Structure formats: C-alpha cells, structure tokens
Image (tube, rainbow, N blue to C red):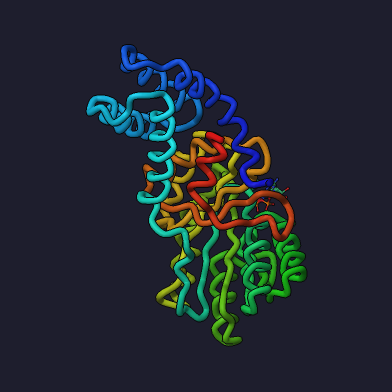
Amino acid sequence: DRIFKGTSKTREKLGVIEELFAYWNLEDADETLEELEDALIMSDFGPKTAFKIVDGIRDKVKTGQIKTGEQMRFELKTSIAGLLTSRGGSSELAIEGAKPAVLLVVGVNGGGKTTTIGKLAHKFSSGGAQVVLGAGDTFRAAAAEQLEEWARRSGAEIVRAANDKARPDTVLFQAVDTAVKLGADLVLCDTSGRLHTNWNLMDELAKCKRSIAKRLPEAPHEVLLVLDGTTGLNMLNQAKEFNETVQLSGIILTKLDGTARGGAVVSVVDELGVPVKFVGVGEGIEDLQPFNPESFVEALFP
Ligand code: GDP
C-alpha cells in the first residue's frame, strides 16, 4: 500500500508522541499535554492548530472522558480527522452540472502542478469526459511542452500560447473559449508558479482568474492549490498568500509517497478552511487519489 507511506518525516517525530501515550498517567496530565503540544508543533502542525487539538484533549481529561494513554491517542486521531473533515468541507470537486467545468490550478514551481493536471486529465478522460488543457505557464519554457505530452497521453485537447508574447490570461481565456465551442466537459488551467522579485505572481494569477470569468462568468468552478507534501510548515504561508489572491476552493497535496511531512496540511486546512481534494502518490499518470482524512491520520498514527 503506497498511500501516505510518506508521511514518514512527520511520523518519525510523532514517535515522541507515541511514547507520551505509552507512559502517560493521570497524575502528570498537564505536563504530558504540554509535551504533546510541543511534539505536534515539532511535527509541523503549527502552534495554533496544535493548541486547538491539545485544548480539546485537555477538556476531555478534565471531565474524565479520557483516563488512559490509549484513549488519549484515540482522541488525538479523532480530533485531527475531525479538523481535516469539518474545517475543510467537501472533498468532492464542485463541478456537477457545469459544462465546461473550469479548474484553475495554482502553486509554486516544482510542487507538481503540471503533473497533477496530467493525472486529472487522465482521470476525467478515462471516465469519458472531453478535457481541454490551458497552458497558462507561459514563463517557463518547458512547461507547455510538458503539458503537451500529458495532453497526448491522456487524449486531451491543449491550448497553447500563439507566440512568445502571449500572456497567460489570454491563453486561459482562449482555452475556456475553445472548450465552450467544442462543447467540452472540463478545462484544466495550468499557471506559472515562478517566484521572482521583478514579477508579481499573485497579480498575474488574479488576472488569469478574471480573464477566465470574462469568458465564462461562473468560472473558474474550482481554484486548486497544489502543495508539495515535503515542504513542512512553510506550506501554510504559501497557502495563505494564494488564498488571499485567488480564493482557494481546494488543495491537492503531492509527493506523499516521498519523505512527506503531512502534519503541516492539518494546519493549512484548519487555518484556511479549505479542503484537501486529492493527493499525489507518485509520478505516474494513475498516481492521484481522492483525499481521505481517516487514512491520512491512520498513516500518521498507524
Ligand atoms: P510544477 O512545476 O509545479 O508544474 O511541477 P511538475 O509537475 O513539473 O513536478 C515537479 C516534479 O515533481 C516532477 O519531477 C514530478 O514528476 C514530481 N512529482 C509531481 N507529483 C508527484 C508525486 O505525487 N509524487 C512524486 N514522487 N513526485 C511527484
């Protein structure tokens, strides 16, 4: 089972927590809870979320609902799964009834954006949908070629920049326009993720979003942030910035097959209230799975 093999980096640190549970007794509850909070923060959970989780457990210790380390462990898992579920809302794509449905995919370079678009294209094409890819990353020379290859493999259409000077928002406008004219089912919009001082990525993304809506007022139906699962708590700051600019509707967490650090995503979901919709578990076209909070937590605390 390859799923979340890779929450391993976090899991290593969570070993400390397992020890806390093993040796816990009611007399030193306060001290253990403080250590638990520290251990969660060390495991990329972020102080706010760690505090919230531990506070909930503390209440249950006080009211006598938790008396053993095993019960505390159970409560920790339930509470994390709960945060991932309730704060995040639905993990289904909100594309029912939209034709075409437009997904705007954002994220910093190297996170797995293009690969994820390829996987999504394959998933929906194999289900019988007609898919159009919009090559909105006009700044990275190889990006459009890479996307072209995914289009070929998945049987999707692709709309690329007509020339060197074409702007990303223009390309995405054309992609949606093409999909409307074809009567296609889904448009997957790739974007640039280059962080550069002389160039404002966020302004550019906001423009892309507006340009899509100019062609199809109800679009984009989803704005998905691709986050590299190996980046630790840094992903929280990234996610906040993207959310402020383009109002995220979902997260796709990649590279969970590697040495991922899954703890941070709990904070992203908790603080932004944006659900994880898919996880990437490899470089192959089939390596995309719907997110399941319970299996995610199970991988952290097997
Ligand atoms: P982009 O710059 O965000 O478009 O990132 P790419 O899609 O080019 O991906 C960057 C690298 O990460 C590539 O080598 C991908 O094969 C790899 N990658 C993407 N998703 C995953 C994943 O879920 N697991 C693993 N192991 N590698 C991935």
